[in-house]
Length: 238
Image 1 (tube, rainbow, N blue to C red):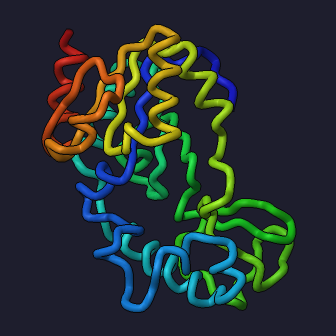
Image 2 (cartoon, helix red, strand yellow; image 1 turned 30 degrees about the vertical axis):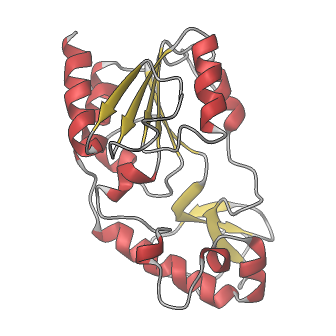
């Protein structure tokens, strides 16, 4: 992705934003019985039992298609509509809530659940139904070689060069539902501040990063589905 004009507002979203829609694919409380994260979030887990991994993501795909964007997604889409070509959404979430809400420019650094990647031809295609051993790649026709288009542990996040390019020109960085005290988010916040951006953190719980020196210029505490719409309304009005 190359920008026709660099965005002025970069929004980084994480798990707490999707959790407000009832979708939390990797939370311990929602894991199917007998499954561990390392079983479904590593290349080794896929190599050991691809059928089990595909079944896990098939289940999550069905859950995602039954869920809906929440007011935080919708508020960011409104901001995108009002401040056209000025907003970039960067999400670690693998769902499509931002797109369904109406945001136009979204980077998924950790992949997309509604896409599959062929391990033979490497092509990435949309996928809304289940993937099984016999499922053929729609491009090369090979069966049994589709994997979820999800970044697993040990794999590089996607399109980070584009994200860093945007951050060097942003005037505002919003960080919502991400562990701002841990890398790489902590470093991203520091880079944005050095480039002159103001940084606002949206913390779902009062204890989230509250005691940490995260580098936020402003903290919005409370349910993100409530604080994000209120902040966007104020930002548009101001």
